[in-house]
Image 1: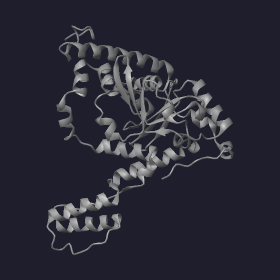
Image 2 (image 1 turned 180 degrees about the vertical axis):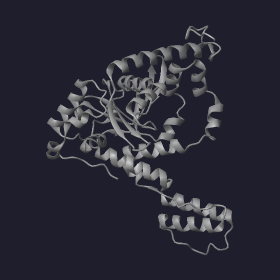
Image 3 (image 1 turned 90 degrees about the horizontal axis):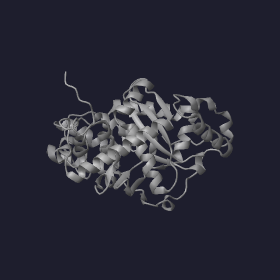
Length: 358
């Protein structure tokens, strides 16, 4: 599942009109990218990120480290505030109940999205995913079949018989084999969906966009010491620079259960993606000292027929979303200062909505 790379000679065979698929972009940015790639070919590696650390840190760390860094605010909390109340912000940032309830959430949709995300951004990791056979872990027969499977995946030889092992010992042995294999399991249904989305992505626009994405700096954490008075962190899916595609661009990969572009456009605003993407542009720009005013959004539908789209976000929409982001930040700072985070009961008094009860 490695990403294909097109040579400069192969670019002559591309139907450039396919860059218009599901188009919502200002033509000038799209044209800049097209002209740059026509003239220079598929981009190579971007500049060293260590050169761009004006007001913070740009680092390649793992996702767990990024999430664990609570000294910086994430943009998601402000997106929720922009569409909700200060209570949404407080619940997202400091309420321990949220973390506790996360343990009980159905993670199936999240896991599917994570695997799809991985197949597009980090195909080398997707290559370590396998389909574990269905087996009853409460029975010796089921556990024995899983032991055989994971022994093969781990390339492990058995030192003795498993016939006399108790169920808990077999489960522990399976965990040891999984860790030794360096692989992760996925449901067969989810694997089928991800494979189909991945094949559609690789074929999209004759493979042009997958080749462009291969050159991006991926999964980079950016910590901004002071953005509008608050420490902020963002983790773009990818960064592409002007020397690569003609513009400095943030790359965002999203999965959706929507089956139409219009449906996703509604979801985009409802879930606060517009505010988050605007925040990413501004924070990345401030830390790097470069103008990241372009967002390339790759959208993968997890619903049949598993459509794929590439969108360049509209400047006017980003400008409006930036205003909403700044408004949310100012409101959050005011609430932090007085340690008050009203929910529905306080929004009318704060002038956030004209609340009428019928």
